[in-house]
Amino acid sequence: MSVRRDARSPFWTYNFQIRGNRFYGSTKCTNRREAEAVERAEREKAKRYVEQAHAAKTSLRLDDVAGRYWQEVGQHHAGADNTERLVGYLISFFGKDKPLTEIIGDDVAKLVAWRRGHRTRGGALISPFTVNDTTEQLRKLFTRAKQWGVRFDHEPRWREHWLKEPQERVRELSDDEAERLENATRDDLAPFFAFARASGLRLKECLLRWGEVDWGARQIKKLGKGGKLVTTPITPTIREILWPLRGHHHEHVFTYIEVRDHGQRHPLTYDGVQTAWWRLRKRAGVVGFRFHDFRHDFGTKLLRETGNIKLVQRALNHADLKSTTRYAHVLDSEVADAMERVALRNRPRKAS
Image (cartoon, rainbow, N blue to C red; front, side):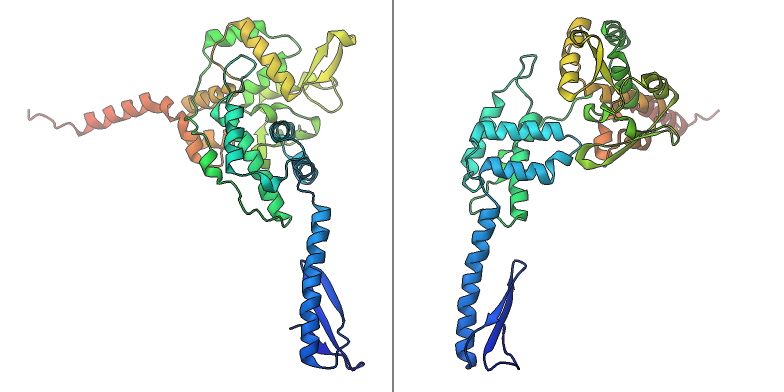
């Protein structure tokens, strides 16, 4: 018990903490047992007070939880625009006033079914990866709320709601496809797509700001997937792409010309690139090649050129070598040649 006698008073006092809040005072009792009873009553009263204050501070309405999440972490994500989009899907499905604590497994199953019916701009159903991104964003709201002290009596079992994701395919760009894309690309967008192909960066990582380009160190430093710092060397080819763009915009590296705005340049955005890519691919007649496949094309060609899978891991900024082994098929011919050389060396020599 947190009671003690104050030397300057005949009464026992109490002193305790709940969730970082300190409570202390006089029990107005001269008997220890009576003082302990008062202390217990004051502790229960303090618990109710803290819970009420916490509830008043943290509304559990989905819209309020999402807003606080955005202020604390979401807006600082490397892919903040995507985070905002995913939260928008959640609010659209559940409604702004849905308490987070009332979302159960059955609700998540319905969310997954709803998202599986969505289509891309090209008309195809969105992938399991994209559906899982929405579910994962909801899980992040739960995780953040738990850090605020919110308790969930019926938190969904998240693993039961993940869709099976097929192994990501590796698509390489043929010389003919590359030529058709180049011929169909608008002049103001050409530097962006050339950079994507030369760097192997993800779409969000390609949207550079000049503050991320260090000419002296010959490096580009940008926050990438998972908030990890991605460092890309400024090769002669990349320098040739970026150098002429200085002066187009004070902050953003890649821009486009808006004819309706008297030819003014505006920064390229994530959504803008996706729309431009869809139109470009259609004009060029290139089928089944996503923007992310520029990254696969880069990794495949780099491995074929070097034969060094660790080097490719570093160039693609893969945290785990397992992610890089998807490109290992390009070494099949080298493996076959090496096996044949060993077989010939081990072949018994005939007696002369």
